[in-house]
Image (cartoon, rainbow, N blue to C red):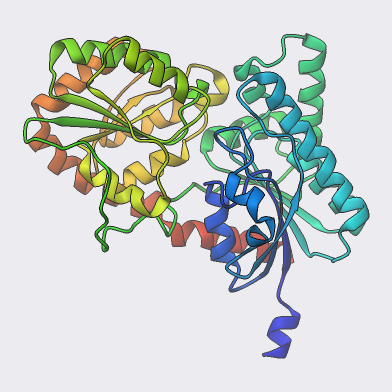
Length: 411
């Protein structure tokens, strides 16, 4: 037993986002902690609403441990709701996490594991740790940079964009192994790096807390009649999700069939805008229920008739598979897509719903009519196919086991 503990890998997870923010890295850390010694370096929680969580401000010490996982938290500037503060948010985590690593982190680790959503700059402090303490570095790539920053259009200067590309490639090149959340990200990374860094696809999964249908919960949900057809959108309500195009489709369905209802779960930079549009346009077919705990999501999905996934057009968005898509798949409900690239192909190729291209709200409207008309037949067929696809390619235990294998190969 003593020998087993002595040989236990010591891993530092570096992630700008961590519990109580809702990201898959929380579930992975919990999945790894029984086998490895896990610490986390992260920032003050402020995603997606853009302000530091009030519960955190009241008692910071309460958030320094998650199920025996030690958490180091560094101060950051909250992202608020504009691009200038988003930039400050990215830069502040880079600076404070790097200072922490250089001057305050005394413990030695066998491995630093970076959870890379946006920004890639989270990997710079991990690279510092790799250089200073001679440790291995693995990066789990959720959003590919510089492509994501091009799509977000935060910067217009070609000089700044060129610099960001150089920094991004530098970070990726200094990894001992890359884990890509999709085949599209893997292919693009291989092109950027000329296949010089080992790169493995490990898909996202539905977190352990998601599947809570065994329990019954009292949910705040608009009363549903037999004629109602509920389309549910869950997760971040932000610019990337193309909320403006969804709104155009909501208006069309109101005119076509008052029984088609739109249920939004989540918050984000476009939540307030959508709330204003609901009042302004008298959209009584639109319900904004706000953020819900992960353990309730499966129960909410169960009340829906279809689940919507959408992203704006752009090269960076075409190669990702949004995390919520996997939870949709796990629920076995028909999926409506308004999205380009890999996710679109998965939906249509496997016949787990109906998907059109990004921003194609007229085609989305047609797909909704088709799905509603043929619902009993399609629902039964899709349910079986979704379960098979999830177990084959997105199963939680299989994906975490793949990540563990990567760790062991770097010993």
